[in-house]
Length: 293
Image (cartoon, rainbow, N blue to C red):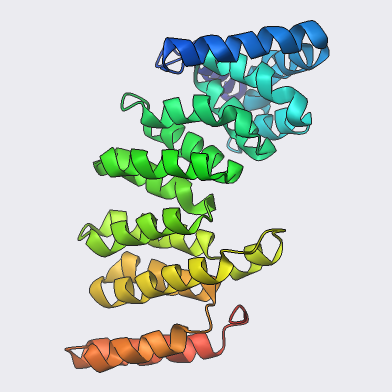
């Protein structure tokens, strides 16, 4: 009975009618489809390969049971040749809720050709939370200035759950101006859920270990400083899960200026409880293996 239920769920994912096609300007959509037609004429094999993966996707979902089926990874392994076949299916809305797997896949490939389609999804206020988060993360992974600006513009216009979805997805964006926008949202919010999500994303954006793997580290120092300052501020202003998220993110960012930031916050703290909490945070940071340049 469980397997049958999972199979029915997988079928429902494909048949789901909600927001199947990316809403984008007709001229932009037509340009994507022209590129698709040229690519298919030059080599139809990637289109067949992506089609086959998506045909098998419902069974993969059923077999995965409570785990996430790695459909996006299967598509992404095809490399850049999979991007236009995936974009075609996203734009035409062929795959129901499994469309998110294709959105994730083009982000994993990090191909700028996906920016327009992904940006249209992020801009669409009718999209569900998980699709918005996935498309934001995909744009963040592409990492170009244009992709980052699409995220920041969408964040500026977003509220409530939609804003949280964008905040959660943009942690993979390591452009300083986008991280600045994320930090500004954290400083401005009094909402604990927003603060928790923003703090975690700042931790991802400033992650010291992740920066070590990147070929282009020109913005590393600025990004990690932005993240650390906003996180120390959030630690002081928030309590509970939001404070914990800020503390954990500070450890991940590991910015060497953090002890001085904590010291300044302690000097300005108005309560003994905050001063004690900051002392504990500074002691924890002193043992932090990520604290290096």
